[in-house]
Length: 100
Image (cartoon, rainbow, N blue to C red):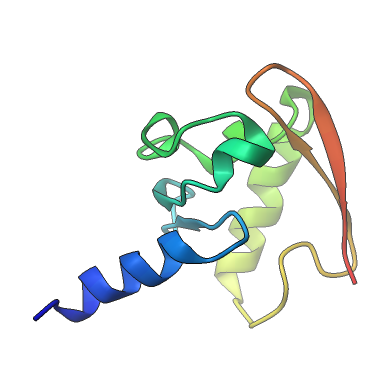
């Protein structure tokens, strides 16, 4: 029988949307295979790196301050709620993620 961690990883890996899990320092702990279709990275290229690697270079520094502020007072919310996030791809492109 699979333990809870293994079941969670299988669940996240099978989700239809790209999933990234980071720790409190912004280090990527998990990236689902669906990340490749959106960002161009295979999961192992991201694991152990910083979450800012998924943003255009010009926005990485500002994101770090937002990230730190969020972890000072975390609360459940959809990613980028109230913001129009810019995300970057492996090939240097970018796209805007519109929040609901």
